[in-house]
Image 1: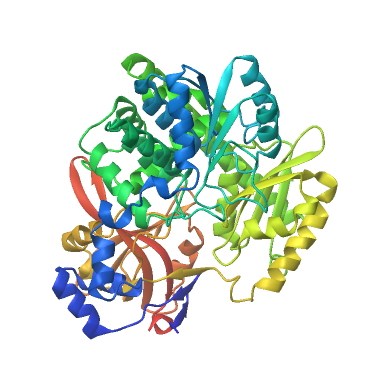
Image 2: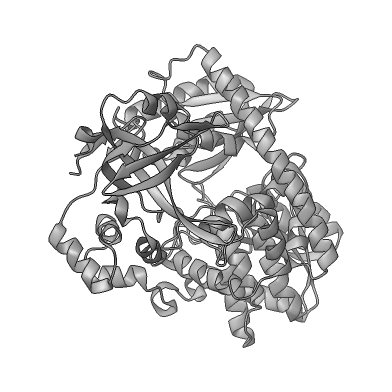
Length: 579
C-alpha cells in the first residue's frame, strides 16, 4: 500500500519506489527519472505495457465500427435514405460533444448527396434530449429518418411516437442506459449490454464518428479531414478517458490541427489568446472548448454548428466575436453563482463535517452554468454536489458532480422513484425532480454515501506520480512529458513532489485568489503559482519550519515569443510528513 502524506488541503498518496526498475525504464526509453517514475507509478512497468501506452497505433487501438451493435443497420438505412432522396433530421445536444457530433454528421453526409438538416435543443426552452413534440414536427415537415447524436438513450416516448408516425429513429449515444432501452429502428451505443464493441469510453462524437466511418468505408471514400478536428474537440470537451481508442484519435486530431488550421479554430485560438506553436489537449480543454460550450449554456447552440463548418470568413469571425462575449459573460455568471451557492451552504446550518452531500438551489441561477459551479464546489468541499435551478412550475432542474469514489449515476438510479428524469455518467449527471422531493433525495443520497464510503474515502486526495528535484524541471523533462500526452481525464498531467524547499521571498496574493512565490532547493530558484489557493498565503507567511514539501505540476509558458518553464503548485506539506 502506498504511503500517505497529509498536506495543507489534500491527503497525498505517495508513489511506490523501485529505483532499479525506474532507472531501467529511464535508460531504455531515454527519459528523465521523474517521467520514468510516472510511468512506473501509473502501472506501465514492463516493456509491452510501456510500448502500448507510448506508441499508439490504428491497428492496436482502433476496433472496426462494424463491431458496434446496430452500426451496420444504421448505415444501411442512411444509404437507403440517400438513394431515395428521403429527408434526414439530425438531433443533437447543446454541449460541445453534441454540437461537434452534429457538425461531424453534417459535414460527412452532405458530400454524399444526403438531404439532411439538423436541430439542437435550447437548454431552457427545450431541455435535454429529443422529445415527442420534435418527432411530431419532423413528421409534419416530411422527415423519414431522425438520427440522434449524443442523446437518445432515454428517449422511450419519442421512439414510440416515431414508430407511430412512420419515422425510422436511429439513436447514437454514449450515455449509460437505464434498465431498458428505447424501441428504436437502430440503437448505436457501446454501453448497451449486448454491444460487443471493446472500447466503451467513446464520447458522443466518437460514436457518431464510428457510424460515419462505416458509411464512408462502404462507399469506398475517404472521410473529409475536418471530421478529425471535430472528433478531437468533442472528445476532449466531454472529459472522457484519454486512453485506448480516444488517445489514438486525440493524438491524430492534434497532429491534424497543428498541420492544417481551419477558420473556426484560428478564431477560437485568437479569442483564447493561445499563442503556442503547437496546440495541446489542455489548450483545447481550458481555452478552446469553453467558448463553444458558452453558446449552449447561454444562447442558441445551433450557431455553433454553422461556426464549426462554415466557409465564409466574415460569418465565422462574427460568430467568433459572439463566442468571446458569451464566454466572458459565462465566467462572470459562474463567479456570481459560486459566491451565492457558498453563502447559501454556509448559512444553511448544515455541518459539512457531518453531511456528505452538498445541495443548493435558486430561482436565479442559470441552468447552463450550474454544472460548472458544481465542479468547483466538489473541488472545494470534496463531496458529491447537486445544484438546482428552480422553475416557475415548482420543478428543480439540476446538475450533479461527484468524487472519484462515488458513482452518482448509480445513486440516482437507486433514488429514481423520487426523480422525474435523470441521466449521465458516474461522475456527472443531470436530473429533475419536484421541489417537495428534495429533502427526501438529500436523505436518500446521504444514506447511500454513508453506506458505501468510509471517512477516508471522503477526504480530498491527490496522487503523486514521482519524486523530483527542483533542478529536474528543465527542457528535458518538458520534452519527455510530451510522450505522455495528450493529457486529460484518466491521463492527467504528472504531479511531482519536491521535498525540503525553502521560501526565498514573501508570497504575493493575486486577485484574492492565487498565490505566487519563489522556492529554493538543489541549487536553483524556481517561481511557483498556486491557482485558487488563497488559503496558502497566510500559511506560507507563518511557516514553522525552514523547509517544506511542495506538490506541483510543470508546464511551458509562452510569453512575448519566449518559452519559460513554470511550476503550478497544488499543495504544500511539512517535509517530515512527505518523507
